[in-house]
Length: 358
Image (tube, rainbow, N blue to C red; front, side, top):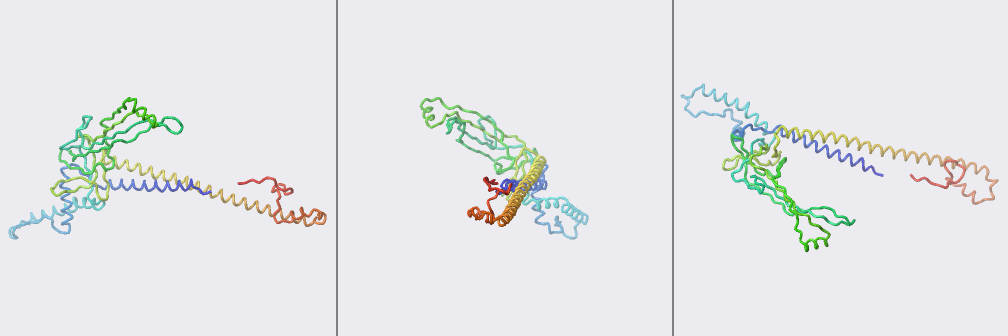
């Protein structure tokens, strides 16, 4: 029999190892993203990165446009000093971050705001609203009992343009519904019981159904919620900075801070790795156990065959010695002259009357 249990454990260990490696990689990427302390610095960061990428090869970033006789050498030395400091401190840090995580991936924090928020039925004002309606009912199964079940009737989602504001500036966020870590608060959850119509109830009963009611749930991202967003910082045609999903890189919209996200990914990475090691040990143990059992069984069968052949040879030799005395019974002599007689492997005297099948 094939060791399916051990192979399944080994495959599970490989999958968990890949998950742990992916989580660890995401944690390393989040550690390398550029952190924006205040949103007012985001515009300067993006412009400085473009400026440094464009003019990095020039030895002088700041040029003086005055005639040569009136050039102030102290002013020129100041510009050279400022240029060197910019290259060695600020630009180097941004370029190092940009080389690790391309395109420019930043993390910002602030409170949710919008110029035209959505007014929810629960009384809240939000920027993302999801509404679902589920029909709950009892259905008659094959065993004759009633089992509760549900079916989705309505799934609707709304989103308006919104931004993060920390008091020093604001930045728009695009495509947050597909981000990792987004949690929508439950604004309203009600259960509407079905009507007690006799005709409707009779028809549903004949179909094997009993309608219980409709459960409506409203989830919303309220105005004023504190969020941390990790994504690509881009500048559109009109000069507005926005955060969006990068073509390749992390995209998080979470109420947790960036340090909490990194710690959480690290915990999951270690958990996956330890679980992978455990499944590997169990899988190797099951495969080794099956292999040892198979080898021992083959060896036992081989030893048994040797015993039978040795007993048959011994009995055949005895039969040849006393063949003159038993010549009257031809049928019994023919059976005893076989290479492997039907002897019992225990007593080696009588024919076997039972067989043990492994």
